[in-house]
Image: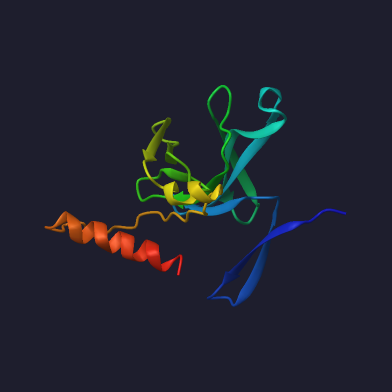
Length: 172
């Protein structure tokens, strides 16, 4: 017997619960004011020694709560898929679904999928996970959507030293 997934809603005004039948949704998101769910669909790749790769992103949007009607949208990845594990970070204010690599790697990639514009962008960061390479393992990386930091630092050494100070505290 497998798991059955349910989404529980609470109507504050009526003080009542509602249960929405669900299936496995990797991450719930707010999709333009509606409940959305994102799944990453994996398949085995024969050329990668039986390894798994991400073939497509599936977006489910709850169109009608009463009738429990969902719309499904499928966004394929590259022809050969993507091999590194990804996490669904969430959705930006500009309606882009953000995915990031689960583990620190060189380079570390963050992906932005815009369903409206039908674009898929990759931004990579150099040096993320570099300190873990000497230990032959990767560290988990947590990413957040729409976080804004004030980077108007006049002295670049201050910015650099504050990052290293935080990094050293993790290994004490």
